[in-house]
Structure formats: structure tokens, C-alpha cells
Amino acid sequence: MVRMLLRLSNRHSPRACALAGALLLAGCASTPPTAPPPTTTRTPGAPAASVARPPADVPPPARAQVDDRTPAFAVWLSQFRQQALAAGIQESTLRAALEPARYLPAVVERDRSQPEFTRSVWDYLDTAVSPQRVTRGQAKRQEAAAAADAAAARYGVPAEVLVAVWGMESNFGSNYGDISTIDALATLGFDGRRADWARQQLIAALRIVQNGDIDAAHMIGSWAGAMGQTQFLPTNFLAYAVDADGDGRRDIWGSMADVMASTGNFLMREGWQRGQTWGSEVRLPTGFDLARADPSVRQSSVQWAAEGLSAATGGPLPELSDASVLLPAGARGPAFLVGPNFRALLRYNNATSYALGVGLLAQRIAGGLGVIAEWPRDLQPLGRSDMLALQQALAARGFDPGTPDGLLGPATRGAIRAWQRSSGQPADGYPTQQMLQQLRGH
Image (tube, rainbow, N blue to C red; front, side, top):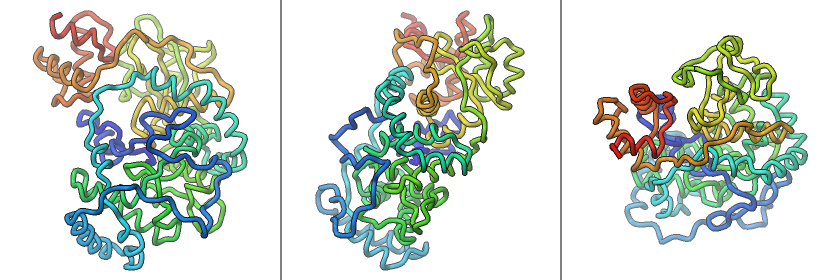
């Protein structure tokens, strides 16, 4: 993904639905790799700031060891070749990329898995913005200074934000996956659950090979088709990747100039506003209507200040013309005022925890403070089955959460708020185990 992939496709969320082919398939960004990176499923690469393209005399990474392609997969590949030819992919490209293609059962297993447990935002941020991650990010910021500063000047995205995305997506280039993108997308296309999406991405991947940006053997990334050091999907690569070093190839695997420029280009074109911050931690006034802490409620910092909001550090609110209040852990947790640049980060990966992680990591890399208010660590996040039970209980009491699916979206938040108001509780729309027990009558 870019892992602007479909994370939590939620019929309750129009934006999530609009991104639905991408984020559930992302895989990588949802849980930022720790340092050192895991080694059970990926082969770490060289340090990203000094990565070079594989020399011609070095064999490419071995494809994942799996069973021989099934007859059905071979038939599917043959049929897909006709679609690819019709889309303008040359026969020579198809021979080089598809003839070695292998069906990867593990990709299907991961795509179909529905994790039961959800990480709390504070648990996620403990890893995403750990002291070790911050220290390493500051060092990597210096190592990649030339590329990051050039991209920042060109696209208006601060260098520390670009470095933070790099850190979140691949642990600063050390862990961006070792699975053949062609194999992964062919497997997903053959499997059929996301066939149309996977075929679109596979055509895009073949076009990248045909354009000469990288050969199929060295096109590697995550199990879901996200590629390179900041994890672009093939379609996003075609739309946003940049040849910043002028060598004629857009190389998000080995060229730090291309990695930073491509990431900056994506964010700029998805709405990043030059000179604005992503957001800021704030304090809410006594009696603040928590229902206004919603992405749909947007106004200027001046208007929010008039309602009594103040910066958590005691200074003025950041200048934002179109900002909303974010309560990622409900009324008991920290509050943030977030603007267009936070929403641009959501375009990269449509998960609040991710966008908050990038913003806070960038803030710390630049020498700023972390979160000041305490997280409500005694609260337990709801797993998917518990969320489904909560939705069913709300519906049984006449509060419409939409179709129960175990995912938290705007309709479910609205139902939670309505129930909270009816029971005299702060209407923050944040689900808890205690709430589930109350709704069950325990």
C-alpha cells in the first residue's frame, strides 16, 4: 500500500467503502514492525538510506517455496493472459512475469483471515512511537537528509513526516516484504474473493515491469501486493511514483530519492496542505458536547478556540481552516484537533491509529513532545465477535447500528452515542467491554 490499502472495509463508513479494494489487503501498516524487525516471514533488506539495486550478476530473491501450480491456477493464468494482452501488456512481458508465477496458499489464508482481537490505540502507539523507533527515526532522518529535504521542498510535506511514513511502512526500509508481487496478486486474482481488484493490480504490476521500472523477479513486497520501502500498490505506483534521481526508473525499492519523492507526491496529491501541521493535542472545555468530536464536524481553529478548546501545551491552537476533534480512546483519553493533513495520511492508510502514529512519530523525530494526557489503559478493546454482539444488543434496544458486521463505523458510533445519551453517559461513541455488559443487562 501504499498501504493506503483497504484497512477495515466497513459498510458503515463511506470513506472505508470507497477504499475497499485496498486497505484490507494491506497487511503491513496495521501493525508497525518493531525494532529489530520480525524475521519469521520476511527477509530484511539493507539499510534503506544506502540501498542499491541488485547487481546484474546477483540472482533475484527466490520465490516463495510452495506446491506446484494447480491445474486450475494454470488455466486461470492462461485466461488472464488474454485480458492482459487486451489491456496492452506485451507478450514478452507476460512470458517473463507469468510463466514463473506460483500459487501461494499462505496468501489466500491471510486474505481470508479475520482477526478476532483489536489492538487498542495506546498499544499500537506504544510500538509505533516507541523511544527506540524515535531514536532510530532521528538517525535515519539524518542519513536520508538529502532525499527527504529535496522531496519536502518539492511537495510541501515535511521531511520528518516522510521519514515517519517510511518508518511505519517498512521500519525504515529494513522490512518491506520478500514475497513476489506477481505471485501474490495472481493468487488473489485466482482465488476470486477480490478477483476484480486483484486483476486490476496485477495488470498495473505488469505495466510497471513493461515500463522498465523494475523486473518481475525483483518486484517484491507484502503478501497483499504492496511494494517497496513505503508500500505502494501497483496502481498507486503508476499514479504517484516519481523518478527523482533521474535514472529513468521509478525505484521505490532501492533509490532513497525515489522513495521520498514518491511518498511526498502521493500525500500532496491526496490533499496535504503545505505549511500546515497534521494536528495537535488539545484540551476540551468542561461541558463540551462530545458528539461534536466527529470527522463530519469541521471548522476553523478560531471557531474551536471560541468554544473553549486550548492546546495541551498551553499555547494557541494551530492554524487550521478545516479541523475536527478526534477522541481516539473516547472521553477518558487524549483529544486532538486534526486537519486536512491528517486526512491525507488517512488516504495513505485508512486507519485512525496509523495516521495518528505517523503524525506523532514525525512530531517526535522533529524533537517535539509526545502525547501529554494519559490513555485509559484499564479499558479493553472489543474483539470482532464482541463488537458484533454490541451491535446486536444496540439494535435489540432500538438503536440502529446498521447491519451488524463486527466493525465500528459511523452508524455504529451514532447508535452508541444515542444509547449513551439515553442512559445519562458521556456520548463519546467509544465502545467498551463495560458498555457491552450493560447492554446485556449484566
